[in-house]
Each structure stands twice: as structure tokens, then as C-alpha cells.
Image (tube, rainbow, N blue to C red):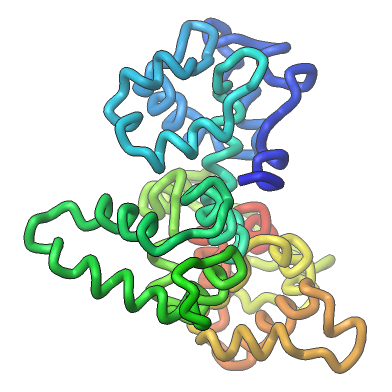
Length: 317
């Protein structure tokens, strides 16, 4: 994944393991703070990491990983190897968390580029190699007859010059031509399933019906009550928090089509409108105007949480 890996791997001098180890009670909380994930997410992924065969030090060696059935899948094996510390030949729990968080929160383009660099180590993708990859996806006997059709159809999108090979840009552009809902579903990855995240959110005291009723909150400074319509200042703050994430996914959650998103991105009347945060702000204002009295902050907050933008959703609580 090249440049993307450098965003994930933490130098040993700054690693969580300098301050904790799996035997200490702060193991989960320190990792949650360092990766900006919730306690529930870190606990769930710690269980998965142990199932992969990590050591008592909270590290996963290549030898231990090789014993797990996941290792037999070349794509999964290639992903995990991107996060190995070259000196220790292990994957730390912190880097495991950061890698999976990248899979969840990265925007569509970064995910597609990351996938391409996994398929053939970043090299151009010949049709015969791509066919072998598709063969691993279509494992049922009744699906085998579809392989050639699928490969040929995809190469019509990705190989417009009919060269028999696909480079990264053609792969990206070809994938982006796919129907947006289909592409979003294919790339969707959740550290914590949406229903579990919603259950945890509902159990927070300030949202629980069994807890004390919270005092009314002031609307000064852009803060809004759960059922109110968010003001423009709040929408501006949200835009600043989410513009560098996959905000196209948020737009989809708010019922905008691919063409709408492209329109927001192409508004270049002045330097201000070229700013990604301003594009998101315009999208949120359009949603608010379209929905009218139904543009409740609770609706927007839920959409943000489903897109793993919890910090922005907190502005609406």
C-alpha cells in the first residue's frame, strides 16, 4: 500500500507498548486513546487479534499467523504483511488497529488505490492475473461459468485501450464508473457493526430513557439539542471535521446521488468554494434545505455515526 502504510505504522519509539502491556489494566484504554477508537471497538479487535495467534506481548509473528486459516488466502496474507515491523518481524496490536481503522474511515479513492496495490504488489495488472483473483472470489461450482464474463466486463471499464493490462489510474477510474451504491457496499468495512454502535450510543446516560433527563442545552456557539434543526454554524463545524474523510459516503446516507456529489465537488466559482470543507458544508446546507422541518440533528448524527464520524456526531448531542 506504499504511502498508505506509512500513515499506519507507528515508530517503536512512539508505540503504546512503551507504556503498557497486555497484562496491565490500561492495555485497552491506552490503545483506544492512541488510535481514537472506542473502548468497545478496541476490546472487540483485541479478541480478534488473540484469535489470530498473538503472543503474550501483544504481537503477531509471521510464524504464528501462518498457523491461522486466514493465512491461506493470498490477499489477506498480503494485507497483513504490509503492517509487519521489518526489524521485529511482527505486527503490533496498535498497528493492527490503525490498519483496520484505515480500512473503515478512508475515502473511496484511497481504498481503491490501496486495493490495487495489494492485487499485484502495485504493478500493472495483466488480465490473466486478474482472472486468477476472480477465481478466488467465485468459489462455488455454479459460479465458475461467470468468471470470463466478469473479467471481460470489468476490463471494458478498466482497459479502454484494450492493452490486456490495467494500471492504477485505469483501475480507479473504472471502479468509479460502477453504480455508487454497489461500490459503497463493496468497500464498506465496519470495526463495529452499525447495530452494535447504535446500541452502545443509546446506552449513554445522556441518551438513555431510563437515566435522568438532561438539562436543556443552549444553542450558543452552534450546539444543538437532539431534536432541533442544526444551524449553519454547526454544519460548518461538522464540515471541517469530516471533509478529509469519506464524505461522499455521508452524502449517500443523506440520499444524495453520485451526480449530486460530483456537482458539489465541481463548484469552483472562487477559491473558497474549491475548499473540500466548503463543498461538504454546501452539501449539508442542501440537505437541510431539502428536508425542511425533517432535517433534525438526530437524523444527521445517526448518518455520521454510521459513517464512523463519531467526533462530528458529538457536535449534535
